[in-house]
Length: 87
Image (cartoon, rainbow, N blue to C red; front, side):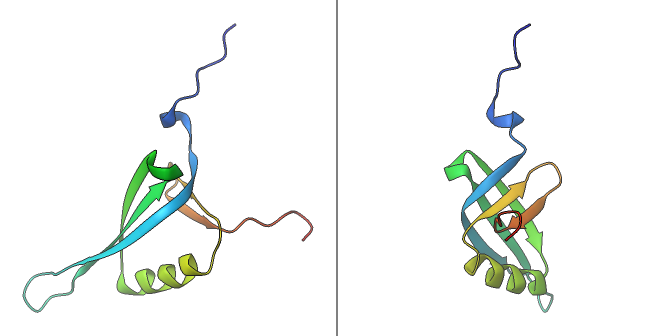
């Protein structure tokens, strides 16, 4: 029996290569909208997340201080850092 072929769409967890925060003005006098664009596996996949101002602030700090970040596409979960078991 032939094994299923691996495709870009079959990968569920990808490594974050680059990211960009954006802010869009809201209605006059209303709050703006923060988004975070994730570029995964050197552009093989992209995702855009809508954030609160607090989440944007926290994520910017965490992303700036973490060497490796992964993103689970199906669950929409960012995973920070990789630690060897027992460390």
